Image (spheres, rainbow, N blue to C red):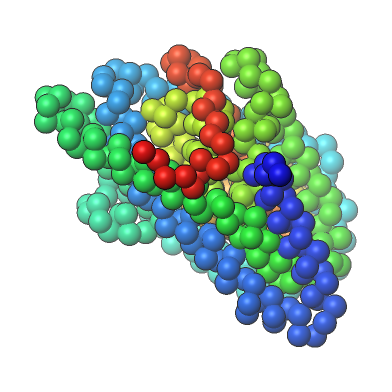
Length: 435
Ligand code: ASP
């Protein structure tokens, strides 16, 4: 029998997980059973993906940069990557602002609901505000300062320090370009082989993906808050989801125009990574799969994918920036504040920067939202308003974050003539012993 394609398998796992959880919540003992016996398998799945994120970035970036063989190529690709990332982020924030200003979801929140939400989620909101304040107290050049690690092992020991690992890998790759070929060659070969091993590990982990997402979604459903609060925030959620859907259309259009690859080619290639982003709410955990899909199924050559994607996973968060813009204006509306045009322009700048600064882990966008709120003079306590629906929206915005990285990698690849045909492997190749 022909094996179902990966995205269908993952989708089946997700649907089965939701149905299973809905059945379990009918029993008193059901939610505990899911938390104790199902959820750990979801966590094991996410952990195994995160486990290989740092080694993957190190090996693939060092290999990718050294393969360029020329510093000017590196700066050309780097400039394009950062440039396109910033453009897509600004488009995302602008879409979010337009929708929230037209729909005005905050205006429909009654004062009672507002107070109830603030009351219910005050504690949760306060802890996010405290996390954000730690970041806010630093000086203007702090982000730049933090880019350079003082110890590569301690940088690599924390998944939150991806940018530092990226810095080291690029720096190391540049060193490799600059030394004589015969000295560089054994080091390159080592990272080449290392990279292959990591890619194989991704294949193996993905064999468990349908089961992993089953466990993740089942746990999420039994732990989700009451439906009533969701209803009060429905319009806000609709605005975010609508904006995110539009953003996906923008990517499809860009890829179509700039690379001549059809929407179905793009959708088919990236969908397993999207489903995984949705299930894990983490671009970092999804990165290994995004890289595999983009290289094997979307024709982006390895030296481009290995450079563009790890950087994108950490700094290019279009879904997050769009959500931050909608959330900020929604909170202002709910508090009866009128935001001037100038303030909204300010939101474009702060949401772009805040999304760059958000870590690629669940809930990070909400922490950085505090900074957007503070800059625009919107009460930070408003964070409590949107807490109830943050997780599902986080799942959706992570899909957009990952899709954006993949789309940009195709555009950059095209611009440097590194977009070829996909090298799709048979499903059975994944666990075949390679000779
Ligand atoms: N969860 C998002 C990501 O990993 C970040 C966020 O918006 O919270 O891409």
